[in-house]
Image 1 (cartoon, helix red, strand yellow):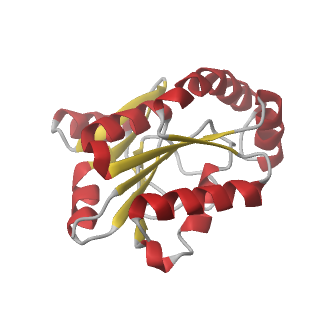
Image 2: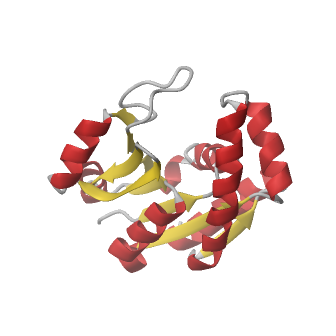
Amino acid sequence: MKGKCLIFSAPSGSGKSTIINSLLLHPELKMEFSISATSRAPRGTERNGVEYFFLSSDEFRSRIDAGDFLEYEEVYSGCFYGTLKQQVEKRLEAGMNVVFDVDVKGGCNIKKYFGDRALSVFIQPPSVRELEKRLIGRGTDTPEMIAKRVAKAEYELSFAPQFDVVIVNDVLEDAQQKALSTIRSFLNV
C-alpha cells in the first residue's frame, strides 16, 4: 500500500521541527522525513543529505529547469528551498508516510499535487512577538535575519486558513499531542 503525505508549514521559529521530531519517535506511524534541498549555506552542525541537500544557486536553478522538483520557492533573494520528486516517490512507493517541513507556499503546492493523499498542518505561534523571542533565543541568526523572518512570518500567517489543520504552539507538549492525534486519525492508526 502506498504511503501518504504529511505536510507541516509554519513561520520560522514556530516549533514545527520540534513537533515533527516528536512524531518521528512513533514507529507505528511509518513516517520518513522528506529532506528538502536548499541553496543556503549549512547552519551549525547541519550536514548535506541529513538536514538538507545543499546545492549552489546555479545547481538549484539547473534542477528546476530539469523538472526535478515537486515544489520549490525562492524564499529570500537567491535562497531557494524545494522538494525533489524522486526522494518523495521512492518513499511513498515503499509504503512509508512522507513528512514535509516546508514553507507555506510549498505546503499549499504539495497539498494541491497530492490532494486527499496529503494532510496539511499549519503550526502557528501564539503571537508574532513570542515568535521573535523564540528566534532571538535560538541564537542562530543575525538581528537582520531575525527581522526578515519576523516580517515574513506576518505574511505566512495569512496562509493558515488554506491548511487542513491549524495547531497553535503555545504549550509545546499540548501542540505535540494535538499533532499526534491528528496524524493518527488521518493515517487510521
